[in-house]
Length: 283
Picture (cartoon, rainbow, N blue to C red):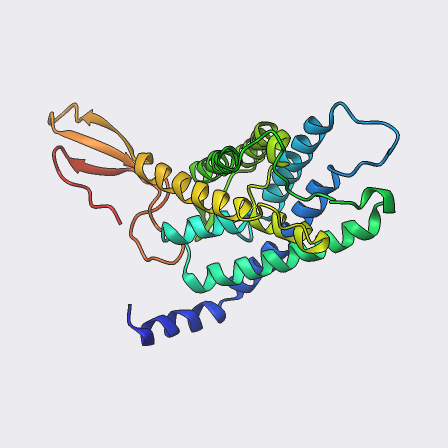
């Protein structure tokens, strides 16, 4: 794409009413996701250790993801996570300009939510509040692998649930919420489960806690990209049908084409009849 064409496309996006609505939803969704999710890590009773802490954290993140996707997916693609945004950018579902705007508001919203949470909790509970830390018994490589896999399963589930509705990409709430909860059950004991660079960055800034912080950026980014391309590679499923009158073989191809910023004549879950052995070009 030439530079002139790129700036023309950016101008077109800026002038879209839906674009700014999506940006606002990304801000609100990330704000509430980080606030309610990280609130589950707070130790309210300093005299007692909660034996169900991991289950509480996992449930909180999973449920708030479910609620927010249900509430906001009609207006945005409910990303709330720079790793998801980068994955959508790499697979050409969104433009570079849109991705940059989304990541910016996600980081700002996460910082604001951490400030709100810091002001709400008792002083004795503020030490390393919601900071992602590597368990002393876990190596750096293991922590990286855990963050990678946790993000992989979430992004893979997110992509598998994407549908196009009214020219917008909409994920389904249940797969997103369940996969977030599963990732936290898997990773919370080892790394407090980041799988979201915005969620990891905000507490680190407030508590100046940068030990092994790279793990909570590189792991989720790579895990998300691999999860996205894994789904893209396996997304097409086709069945062969035979016309009972003519005997001609056809295929019904189900594919997640029609990307958000790429014009396409195909739509989500569209049945496309093709002659057998005919090559169906991918975007």
